[in-house]
Length: 403
Image 1 (cartoon, rainbow, N blue to C red):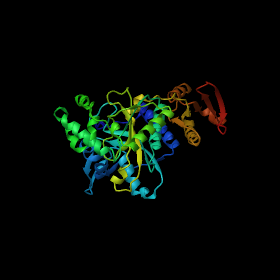
Image 2: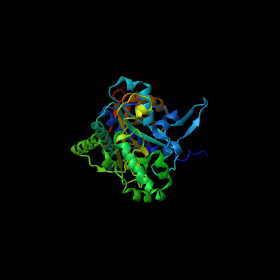
Image 3: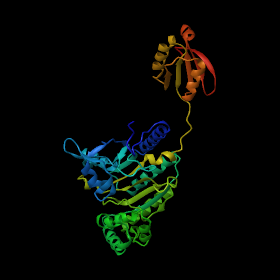
Image 4: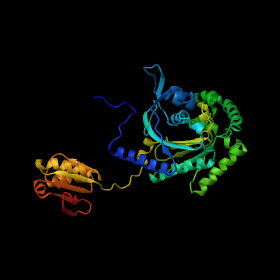
């Protein structure tokens, strides 16, 4: 028997209902905020992610599904969504058109990492990207959108905030951090040693407990912000407070790549184990320029759908639609015709096996439909169909034209 690859799961049954409910909920909320759907390819040039995510990251260094295709192109399955959206934004010359462009997307991502609960090799993300708005109010709007999605899904969360500064205040802070880390280099893990030279701010995000103890005394970027970044961060907190969104400041929260600036945020849950992040985002004003576009302010977020599946509180499933069944072979063709016509306005399922009334009612009940409609030879003669409302248990015989 051929099985699915490790870390690549099927979505069906109850999971499918939760998955589609998440997509429909997040889509409706993103559209309310004025965002429009974008679809980017699953396969992109590897260079796109090396330049955007960064060669020093674990995603590019260890986790990408990368290969040479038949045209000798170095390609990979997308490991995240932002880079592809930025590539499309530049390729369609939207960076030159000016104005505001807001997109949302959802789809499969691929990372070759150790599968665990809520973390797969093929997983799905819902993401949002906004281009052309250089205002902390747009950052707040992103956070409010995530909050709306999680609240609608019945998912509790804690919101963590930080500021990553800008070109004025980040470089001198980075030097302070490097100096601090090098003073305790004998006691930090290999990943942190590597990051000191490639991406020093990422040491703050290290999951090693002993490293975290050392970094308690590390200089904090929030204490080294320029006046503009500090004012923006204060404004962001005030906007969230005015809109009833609670937050906590986490000075170790980083996005870790050079093009991120100012706002960084993460939504975490205490109900999914140690891997507690369920959504994250921030401002990346320099990424469009990094990928050869015109400098464009941008901010976005992404949510891992599989990580949220078990946390979603599903609404009570209502009975809807029709089940149509035939009592005998003579009535089957007519039942199929009736079902085909009825689908112009309703959800209709049909059983092609002829059964007695009792068994049709059992099948209809299992399918959670509102109406069970059955036709047999007697109904064919009279031009009628028998219908039962499975909610209020009322029954009636209708003329086919009325049905």
